[in-house]
Length: 302
Ligand SMILES: NC(=O)c1ccc[n+]([C@@H]2O[C@H](COP(=O)([O-])OP(=O)(O)OC[C@H]3O[C@@H](n4cnc5c(N)ncnc54)[C@H](OP(=O)(O)O)[C@@H]3O)[C@@H](O)[C@H]2O)c1
Image (cartoon, rainbow, N blue to C red; front, side):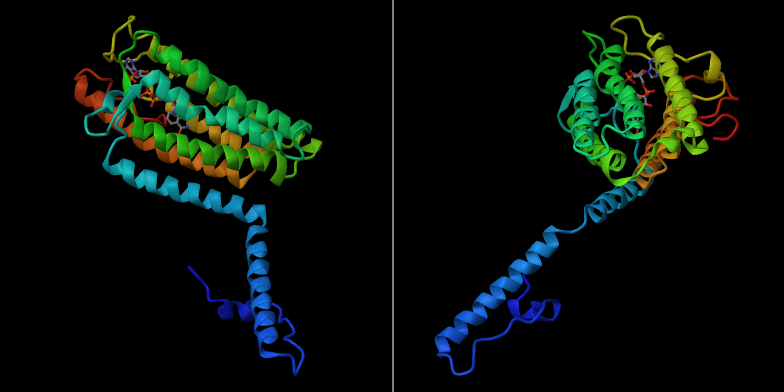
């Protein structure tokens, strides 16, 4: 929107005009200069918008994205893995897609975190360690474990681009919260919210990795097909990996006690719960002997 210079007047302090009796040209020049000064002042004001406002704005965007994701995934299942289908544009090898889309959560997170004034304080460091322990594995180890050399599985570039964009915003929001915008003193390390959050994070991370390991064990090298996973939590639910991931980020939200952490937990649930329901339905359609007592993602509930 272009605001006419005169329209800025009510927003800005008044500037004295030329002295009475000065030649007309001086008066006009003075008025122009005053208006330019006013525009520059307004621009500087906009540029100086508090970073907390920008940060909160991005969190609101992520929350809106979570709501849109639940609504969208209720109608269409994201077209990767067993739900892959034509019509979603060019494709990448799945391992490469995973590395590209998840990697901002390592490099961008680390870069932004390191610029914060509290980056070397114990609590932010401990929390950043939790985050990186998840994402170094997810971005650089998991893709090659799930899709070893020779795997023919591909994933749409459009999905990679959307997930990349999400991870950029999510990394900014969480890294900046940890090392700059939230305040954690050392006593937070013994706060029940931190302790319970870390315990949930650890339980979720272990459950997620165990569940992904079980799935990897179902395929011989080069295979692309699906089998019924068995054992442990798989006897209760179809997607213990998603269950673990949701618990992990609820733990993160508690341990960080931040809106940034909460927005990620909400987004993860919004993304993975509908996908678990789709997986569950798919298993039941594909396998007539699929265990009827199994739920999708929350034991005994859903
Ligand atoms: N935080 C988040 O929002 C978020 C979002 C997405 C994923 N993730 C995490 O990323 C990881 C992978 O996600 P995903 O959606 O790809 O999980 P997934 O659908 O459960 O698949 C995981 C891996 O196991 C294979 N697989 C799945 N079921 C199988 C079966 N019955 N038999 C043989 N192989 C099977 C898949 O192969 P195919 O690829 O060939 O199907 C894939 O390599 C999970 O740990 C998940 O929690 C997190």
